[in-house]
Length: 204
Image (cartoon, rainbow, N blue to C red; front, side, top):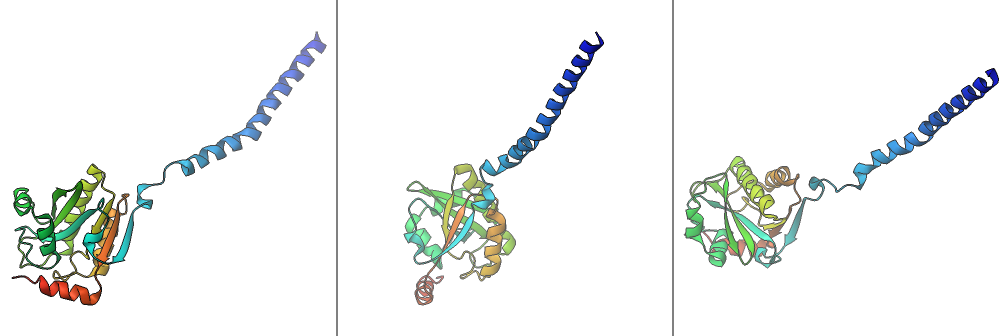
C-alpha cells in the first residue's frame, strides 16, 4: 500500500507540475494576444479628420461635398462670397424660416447635398466673434454627424470682409472637428482673382 500511495502522490505532483508549466508557457501568449486586440479594431474617428487646402473656385468642388460659409441672422448675403451663394442656391426665405440665431447653423439641401449657413452675427453690418463662429461650427458638426456628412468645402470662413484671422480660425476648426471623421477642404482664389471677386460683390 505505501508503494501505491507513493505512486499516487508522485502522479499528483507531476500533474500539478504540468498544469503550472502550461500556465507559465501559455499565459503570456494569451496576455499578449489580448493586448494586441485593440490594434486590430477600427481606428478612432479623430485619426480620420483632416483640413486640406486648394487654390481654386469653391464651387468647382466635388458635387458630393457639402458647402459652408458665414452669414448674418438677417440672411442679407449682400457682399463677398455670400452673394454667390445666394445667386447659386437661393432659398433666402427658407433660411429665414429656420429662425437661426448667432452661434447656430441654418441648412439648405440642394441636389442631394447640404449647404450650411453659419450664423456668426446678428446683422450684416456687424463683425463676428471667434466664439460665435465656434458655436455655429459646433452646430454644423452636430448636423453633419447626424446626417452622415464627411466632406465639407469652405472658403476661408470669417476671414474675408469679416476680418477674422485664419490661424485662429483654422485652430478652431481643428478643435471642433478633430474627434470626427469629417474632412474639410478650404478653397482660396489666387490673390488677384480674389480681389476682383470681392470688389464685384461689395455690399450695396
